[in-house]
Amino acid sequence: MPSIGVKLYSVFFKFMLKHRLQSRLQTPEGDASGGGAASLGVTSRPDEETAAAANPSFTDGVATKDYHIDPLTSLSIRIFIPDTCLRSPEILTKSRPGFGSDAAQSFNRRNSYGSPNNGVSSSNSNALTHAQNVDSNRRKSYAGSNDDLNLKSGSGIYRGYNPAGNKCRRLPVMLQFHGGGFVSGSNDSVGNDYFCRRIAKSCDVIVLAVGYRLAPENKYPAAFEDGLKVLHWLAKQTHLAECSKSLGSLKGGGADLRKTDGNWHVSDAFGASMVEPWLAAHGDPSRCVLLGVSCGGNIAEYVARKAVEAGKLLDPVKVVAQVLMYPFFIGSVPTHSEIKLANSYFYDKAMCVLAWKLLLTEEEFSLDHAAANPLVSGRGPPLKHMPPTLTVVAEHDWMRDRAIAYSEELRKVNVDAPVLEYKDAVHEFATLDMLLKTPQAQACAEDIAIWVKKHISLRGHEFSY
Image (cartoon, rainbow, N blue to C red; front, side, top):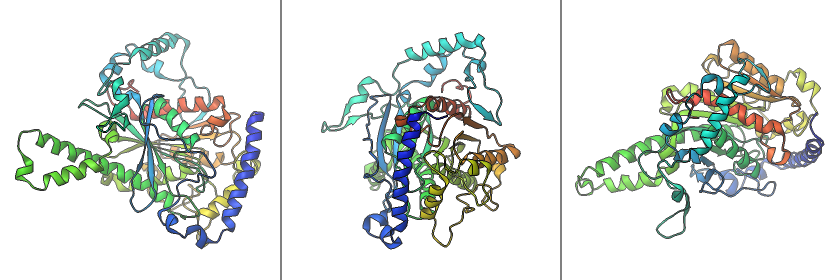
């Protein structure tokens, strides 16, 4: 059973959430969606939760910055980049001799479905210890140094990481969608910031935490379209970075392009202002992973389907995997867990129905809506085209059975779709770890990292991540 602390916090959480949902449901729709601020959209509620300030230096191993990507809405992202981007991939590969595939497997400490046994035998303990010792000593700089962590601009104001040099280590990019029932939560909240830092370090990826628009100010499909918009923005960033690199090489070739082409300096300045330097230097969009938490899992699954439909139109962005953490799935026909655990911890079924009423308009409200029930027909591309999907569920979460059923449907069409179920865990156990402090949360992050690395590893660098 969950601890006493988890139970007490759940009671307080449910009381506050129920009050907020009911007050928003009683607010006239015109008041909820009107006004100048609402036209841009609401992506956070400062009166409900504390925001964590961005920190562009690697003070705790991860640098962060906020980036507003859409001039017409309040859509934004928070970028999390680990300090491993400063290390040479050659150094990382050479530092792991003897670290074979058996030793790379993790202890199988959770119940899992649809995946082979990933246990580690005791004979591999020496290899694991050796890898950990080597890992602690590989602090050589790459495309930067420790001095780069406190860089100043010419005015002496900016202090933070600034990519330098041509040999920048490329990291996979992970799009993370926070939870909150579509009506609360934010990408810069203290809890989400803590979770994204942990994932960035454990998976060795650049995390883009998406600040999508919330309901009821912005009804469906605003939040879902925001997720897809970030994926398209990532593709544009890659093209802009390539253009900027090409113009830079031409400029360095000796020809005075400013004299021969009066528009060169315009495109150069425009490209430089539009390119996000961290992603341009370190991002590898050909290894893109989607991670959705609670209702963010619904958004991630939507974005994955749209990415499949887009195909090569998203090049060079390629979604190679998705992680659905206790997704916010529901349906008109209740599952066994929806009946047995309807009044479970944090999010009970009645409150989740209220959240769906706030997201969907009155005309389209249905628990079998395409955004709510992944098992209804006519939802887009065939499941066999979906990317590998890891599903994380909690023992005491009423949404677990439908998430498991969705994973089973994927496995029926030969999609790699394992399920990790955590004993004595509740909904949001991994993302509220800053408050709950459960051992399952750290184990979950490690398990996600093991599975994700299998799909983002480059050939020849399988153990660099």
